[in-house]
Amino acid sequence: MTILVYIFFIILILVSYFVHKNLTKSELYTTSLFSVLYGFITDEVLDLHLNLYGYFKHGFQWQGFFSCFMYFIPVNILFLNYFPIRESFWSKLRYIMIWSIFSTLFEWLIVQTDYLYYNGWKLWYSACLYPLIFFVLYTNLRVFRKWNKS
Image 1: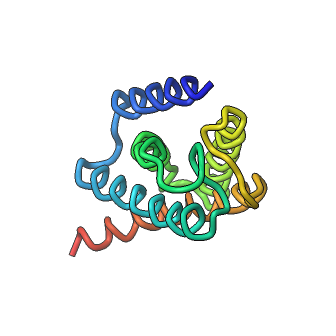
Image 2: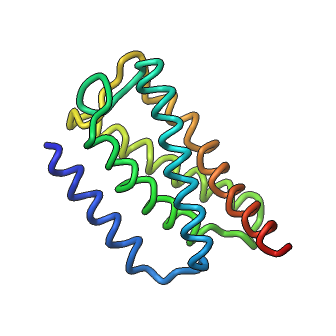
Image 3: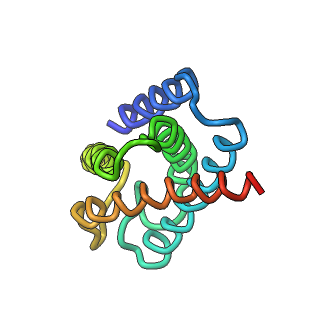
């Protein structure tokens, strides 16, 4: 069943590579690095330190390590590339909520394949955190753009 997760990762990577980019190369690079670092720190604390969830089995897993690159980077690119920056607050909120629902559904699916397991973690924790995570990604882009102007 984990092959389905890798197929999804490959599709996600291909889509993020071939879509028209609305971000500059430096924005893509820095925000992608940030998203991977953000994911690694989260996994370090929640997975390896607190043992609330993990990839395959307890402890460090190379497959889980590479998953951070295969998921966080393309999701970051697609999320920020189409973010409605010049739209209303409600459009931004709706966009973040759509991505949060997508991420929650994807997480539920990968838990079903045993690619990811919970050990005290609940799916609704993720559902509540995804809007914050996506807001942080958007804020990081705004900060980068502001600093890049000066």
